[in-house]
Length: 315
Image 1 (tube, helix red, strand yellow):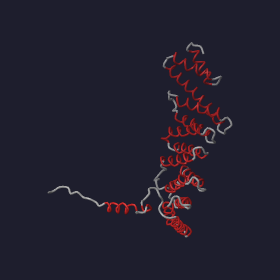
Image 2 (image 1 turned 30 degrees about the horizontal axis):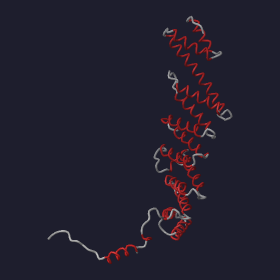
Image 3 (image 1 turned 180 degrees about the horizontal axis):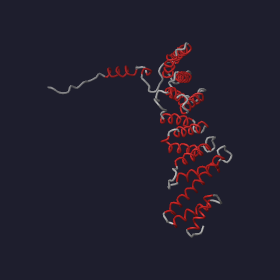
Image 4 (image 1 turned 135 degrees about the horizontal axis):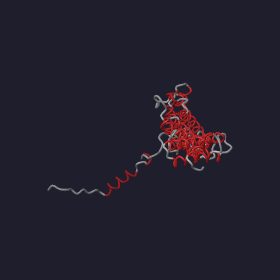
């Protein structure tokens, strides 16, 4: 008969099997997230890294320092190993990898004495790249700095210490990076506005406010009847003059306000002349009155008054 055979185990056998399973040592079972290698092994690896470093074999030292930190991230020498790895990468112009390695120190070893040094080193590197001082050495750059990469680096610096002065500096540098690209004026304005909104008491806020007005002024095309950019620029300079009266940009803002008002008066006069030549006197009168109202004298003031008289309307 073909079928299932009933298998019976002797009670003694069951006890033996269970006892055998229970006798397996727990230490042999893998535990997720535990570091590999004893502290003695890590110390030995770190010593080898230092020896290679002192011998000028930086490429090998980088590898050994990395292995030291990877083998046991919680080792007492792991922060120093990772930090030195970042320094050597920077020295070898592996700036992208150096930036990321400094970030590992910042993320994993906030209690270490090297935390602040890693933050400062990373920030210095990011700002140097943004300033174009060493952009020709970056592997990801071909002909011009990659704006996305630069902004990403500066944003990382900002977010690593969002309440520190370095955050405002990094955000302002993002604005400068965008401003250097003619097609990124809107992004630059947004970045500078973030400085004003998020770091209003920082040393960079007045300059950021000035840059907003400056970019908006540049964006207002001459003769364009949509004057919203000029209006926004004037408001930006007025906010600067009111919020930061003692800043070095306050006087510059006052000059810009006067220029914009003069430009607006000229614009109103030009529009009035356009309507006057088309003999649309009612429309022309509206703009001539604006010129007279916004001025107390001068050539445009006098010419507008003459035009109003010639079309037989009052000021």
